[in-house]
Length: 334
Image 1 (spheres, rainbow, N blue to C red):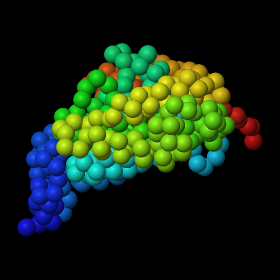
Image 2 (image 1 turned 180 degrees about the vertical axis):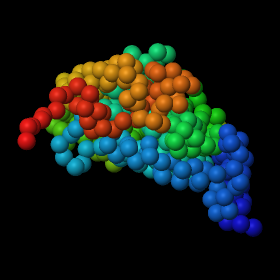
Image 3 (image 1 turned 45 degrees about the vertical axis):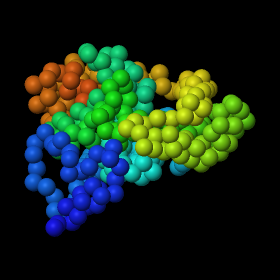
């Protein structure tokens, strides 16, 4: 018995009857010979972590645009925090940790530069709209590996797509990602907002703190343990009414005082204008798109190719491309 088969046998013996077993995956769009050492979901983790889109996350905005300081979150650190919470919940419920981790690593691969500000403007100007979860699936299905895609398993792809929006993943591992994402971003955004002196500890609603705790670690622990406790023995991922309501109140607080704060978001209009002008620039002159987007231009249209290119940019790369396109360069006569 090869190592992968031993792992699959251990999953069958130890995991919950509600878990998604690696051996029972619905497979890949293009069948692959099984790996002798890794399960299909472990293999997906490696495929995502070694992708270019994953590496670019370290230079993409989470909440603060170009923050001064080393300790503010980026889209990369957000993804890592989500993956840890997702694995903890999966472990507590005896679900498949590898499936939860793979979906967590892939869930934001399609996020734009400049965070949700970039997503909103692409949604406005892209025919048919734009949503980062759909783009994340497109990244792993179509854009990575020079257009071949990562060829991930069905369950990981569904977890990526369904981490937000109206659709719901079939697996519990995919469903828990939606809550792990919220737990991570609400709490680390509080931490960053306090570091940026946008809010202070005493600003948080007392009614929320009395339920979830008064510190970063207390809130995450309370919410994580609550999901495990409330979902144990059920074919669903649920929260207690008290924790659900407290988390929703905290999220509303963050939208009012942080996500729409002129201090944190003062530069967003400039970033959105930059993306809008870049989009118009490449649509008008698509020959300036890199070679890897020319096939998309031919097969799916110019707007689709431009959207794929811009949404994959890091913050700095977008600024550099804007500068090359619109800012006059200095010259000298020797």
